Image 1: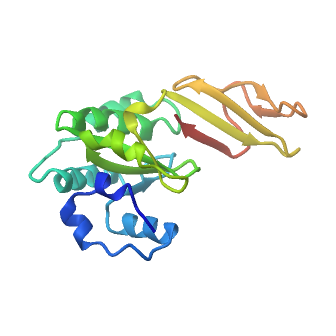
Image 2: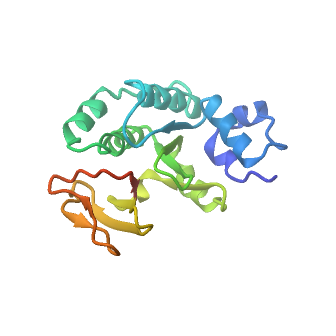
Length: 200
């Protein structure tokens, strides 16, 4: 299996230590996560406070040795900007990316087709290259390429898939299923259904 994205994701010394040629896509993803090259975060927030910051600091130092990033202010700004569930992770990644760019680094996201965030840290000069090396199984994009919108998907009990695209921070409220008219979001933006959020 040809892995075109690896030279843009990790430095040469790390590539030399990897034995990934015979791994399936799923096994390679698990390997990248278990070795701390990528990190996955649920859209609802961090499982343990500070885990994204720790990951980013370690990866920044791996990609550019002796680089130290202070993410205290990024966390403070993200907490202040988070008004709704699901706001914290994108706010934190935005603020973290701003800090990283001052060091010539950037966050990239691996799109796995679900509502989790698969995060990597790359040299800024590689952010467009890793996007260009993407395949159907490995779709990377720089954080800065996001549109600042949220794609909401809800599957109604009638079987209908309902999708909305809103600006980040807009509340999806008082809306119904497009097929059966059942209320999916109340006036406060709460829903009894599973809401899939994709930040784009």
